[in-house]
Image (cartoon, rainbow, N blue to C red; front, side, top):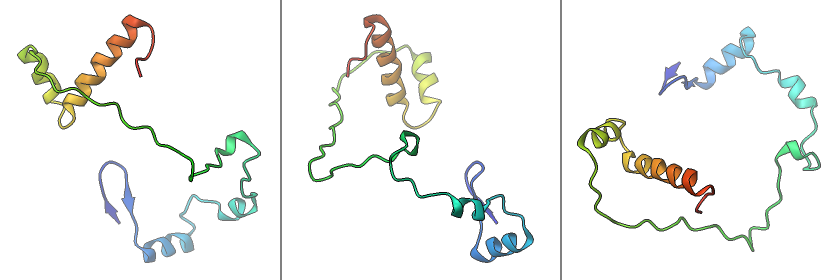
Length: 106
């Protein structure tokens, strides 16, 4: 068994077979096999038919390049959270704009 980040665990095929033989799996495959395949009639099935030939994906909103003067301790706080600190600063500013204007700007 190999442990990756957090609680993600990897098992080899042999380990999985041994676990299944020992009855140590928590998956009820027989019950799962008895369930019908979702056909999309139930909204909880989350199956949505998509016409890919006509689908357009939205482009991300363009960001502006700017120089911004920020207090050193505030910048140190965001940088201390690791990669993506500029995106987090943008998210905080966006949240403020949404709160003040009462709606999402996107």
